[in-house]
Length: 428
Image 1 (tube, rainbow, N blue to C red):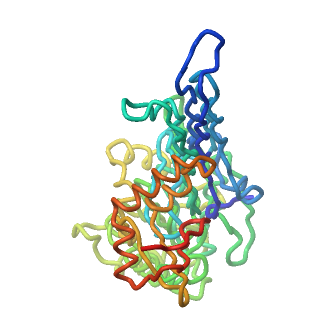
Image 2: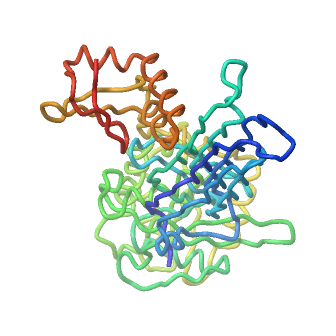
């Protein structure tokens, strides 16, 4: 089954907790703090795998969680770091943050690695807080939470050339004749419901990848049918092979079919209409095909460079002209560069600006909620079993101005303040 769009959840590993311990040896008086740091949490890493051609695996597993770091130990021994979670994805995968729509990665190279969720830092043990002023600190940090997020994965096929055209133009028959691909073929619209890839082998050392893009319809650029999902696979192709039905048995005339696809490509992405293209007149074995082709050439005019379109006559059914067409496609590809990376397209990307340290909201009279990545992380990483750790937290919150901000917002003695999963009594 071919899947080219999925949504998944990833959670990097939390950092391990630092601990509070002191050296306790028979002949070592006042041994000092010896609590080790926690290990770092593991990252979630996407790895490009050329053997994959679909996102189907993500339909059966949608949650991915990496290892947390081990807690620190006595005698200044650090906890073990979590082992990164490697997740294989097909080459051609675009990774977006599902909340913001931001493109996080465009995975186009074999074995390319991308960290999509960063593991949390291990908390520091009390040995790290030893100083001349505090020789016996009872301070330790909990591990930093690992990053978590919903991701949207979109697969864009990596093909050298793409067959485009209206349903029943003959694209599936062409790819079945020139490559090892065996798509379902029948005489009704939308036989092909997903793209097919085939490798065209001409001679030893002469080959290219050809994609059969499912039939587009008018309105595809606006999402009609499965327009956006089909058009997405055209973006990476260096050459477009535009098939037009010359049988005279279709609802639209050949030049009208040509205009529909031409318009949809331009509406979806302006540069697609400028992409190098050859026009292929298919079903030339039909009785009225030559007459239709002559009228077609008169009506389609010039290409965007003011030149006549390069038109090839074939019959995908009988094989007429296919060999010459494939050799021409190979020659054109030799001097046709790769298109710009997909992440530089016209897709709107939400830019997330840095937030202030905290925000204060009165949930109800006498109940205040404080939010913000920095302040919430401080609370989560505080070790609540030791008074020194709590005192350190209070000092930091005062330094960043939380006490003053609550007072200005109208907090009164005895009000309840919530930060992360903790509650505090507010006092002047």
